Length: 288
Image 1 (cartoon, rainbow, N blue to C red):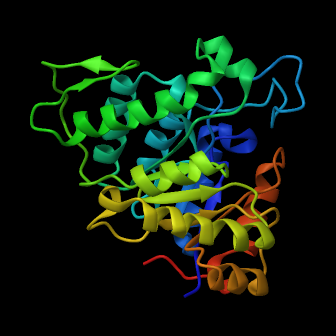
Image 2: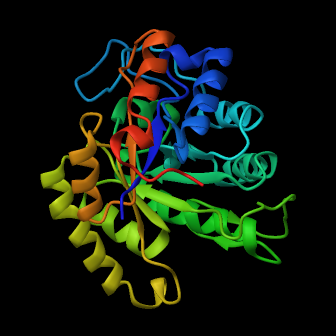
């Protein structure tokens, strides 16, 4: 089956302006994209370092604030965090923010998350890079308890609470959780703790290698995946795909392609990109 299309960067550059972001998200919805996705960088290294994806003065709206804004300007399209750097966030505060977006959007949130990689950002926020994986696993469990348990509680090294509650709970039960990363640990985390996996800037050759490895991890997850549907696979390709690329990714087991407009482009160019690569034009599956 052909993958659906998502649109990345609806909180960056031109889309850091509120009217522009609303316009692009509504256009994507009208054209049959299944989702829009926000990036997450609380701070950026200044001066820029090699690992940084953006210059320090790049305009980046907070992903959660941006999705709340877009929830009010769309009706059907899914709203994804692509991705939240989870160890940088307080899990209880984040659980409240995400649940609020799911409520305000009437059940359209996709919670995309990963451990992060930009050391200057992690250290500035007070997260030792060596702890980011363990924090992520604990925070995911803590968030799920606050969302779904009758009496939420969690006792770990990085999160510890009981005797508290938070309402309203999310509309979706469960909220789709997508984890990113290409390392063996990231694939295991997706297989054991997530509903989907997100591969960033993944060419077809790399996808042909990683998607089967992800399936192997899911098969080995045992009780952690029992009774759950197969992992949903989302990929951002290195360039916007044509029909042949869309078909090839679908044959590799990719369920969604999340495409990126030219970063830093003016609004008119972003609009043309969204129209030129609309699902019907490139042979992708149109969102219902």
